[in-house]
Image 1 (cartoon, rainbow, N blue to C red):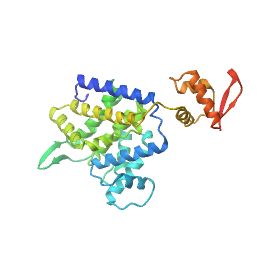
Image 2: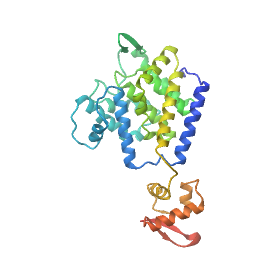
Image 3: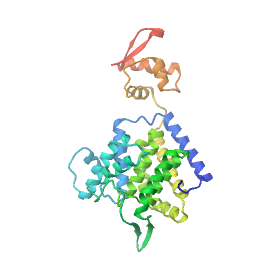
Image 4: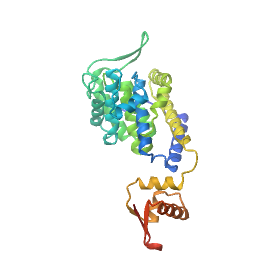
Length: 317
């Protein structure tokens, strides 16, 4: 069964905005971040996603744990960070469309924190806010069937991946398949789904914006629960993705420079290439710009020029 939601004009407008910003990110080569920036964004992602669940460790403490330094803090919080580091380090190895990968990720994420990591819950569960039950999850006996249907939707439905990732995130929260760790699994899997089509999301810490707007996040879940469909949550999450991309775009103050282009190209692992290869990598630059870039790279002794005219090729030093 397809999860219930409506493709409203607001959803379509947000999908268009997000897609446009992804295009701007790709055109600016912001998906090819330096290893240090990727590390910083990964740390921000882990800290924010766990903070939403009540983890007390700050950015500098998460950084220290990643660097294998000793940290003073609640043992449970430290264990949560260590587990999350393991999961995110192998993020590209998880297949987003299989339950086996989903359960495997939960096992690593919740190892030592729950009694049966990587297993669907065997009892009823409800979320209490104050004195009231905010959400009563489906009976445990229905969880395997509901999750099977959800993965079938993810694999087979022709809906835009931006929408499907939001739907999956919401449905994990609604079904609440595990005794604990559902929120972080919903956010993790949305990232994994998105990055299959849009590599920028592997290192885009949109969880930091969710953390900053935590009340609205839970409100979006609650409103969707009451309405019996995830449309409101889809709108909320698409807005988060749009704003996260906006922040990334604002980090670039001007057009990409020649030396930045050269640096990005050399990180691709190429050893020998021609100007044509260079232009194929940067599809929007002119032949004159490519020639200036390569001349600069030769002057900086980053590459060596061999041959002449149409026989010219370059070797990485």
